[in-house]
Image (cartoon, rainbow over the protein chains, first blue to last red):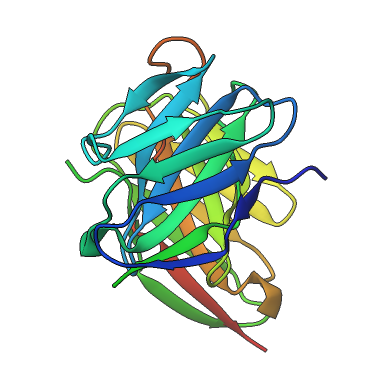
Length: 112
Length: 115
């Protein structure tokens, strides 16, 4: 069965540094999402993306965040200047346009 | 508002027993889904129920939805040790243009099935 993949599995960075989290959605999917889960808390929606533009974003997704689909397969989340509170598990998801979403295994981001 | 609150927060049962988890939500929804997450891993979709449906089955899973009470339950029958995981409900309020679905998750129930 096709899977969403994410790299790296774990990223450690210093406060103020830029990080790029990478995702390869399922190939025939057109809708892409980023969610995050701070340890012990709920999974939170960050942003949705379709047709090369943001469809919706949450209040968490401020100017420090950006998303891009640089080619036909990758979907990236960039955090420009990381803060300690950005430490979380970041999940990429994709769908064909139904409510059911396919999630990747996540990238654990640790900001020190 | 806090959408998608599950209870109990943790549930420990013996293999072979049934496990019931509940989810409540506050705003109107179009769909409610249940996802499973093994420790430190991604979320796996289990089952979806639409707002005009009351009950759905899939294998050992049974989900009910009561829109008047804004609540749902997930029943796992004849549980196995491999069912040990966290279970989350996720709601969506429908399209925000096109087929984009923003999911709102609850805090989850940690299910432990003891062999």
